Image (tube, rainbow, N blue to C red; front, side, top):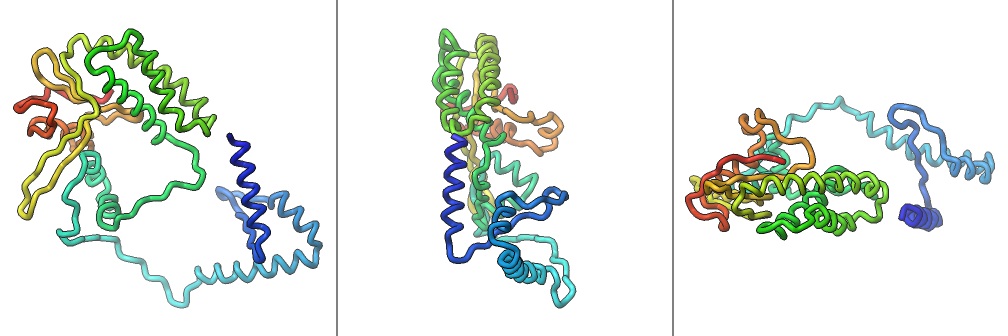
Length: 292
């Protein structure tokens, strides 16, 4: 609950304030606008008295002066050259997922940071869940529904999907604001998805969900492995296959796909045609792919 988190934060603050040496700071500007000292600091100043509080401020000015000296170097600054990492071939990744291929095309440094430097971004402290977390729980519920009812739809598809949604949304029960905004939206998605499934399955003979695949691409030195997880692959009445990827955000445009900036589904189609998915028989062909 929010009250519990606030209470724990206040407890931690009081504990730290009892240390022998404490430095209290506050921002003089917020988003470009001047700020006002908190009532807590104003109360401390009033209790300490003018003479003691002046001594506290003067000691703090020493730290501010040292910090400002960092922006006044003795020699003129020389701009750093643009990073151009060229790791040796032995250090380069031998395998990437289809989503990482898109990252590589759009921002190669992300691949360098993740696979060469092995850097992992840290989550913000006590951050509220955002669009990424919302997409994860909605995608998880729909993916589990598709796996569980791949052969036959239940009598109440929307009810079953909503029940699965409650299980996935339980991970965010400590964030009532997210629940209040996201859950009604998920219920609308569940009813839409149920209608979409009932209509779509009339022309589908088989469905596999959350299916892993990989293919080996021979190189001059060794082999590169392309891997990925397809959200859903269908087989129509003509024996051709359809690849679907669930999206809760913006759908890739046709131009992005044709230019190669959004290669996830095209790479999954290539993997399917190259017998990359074990559940798909050899020699299969792709009819089309889409992002519902």
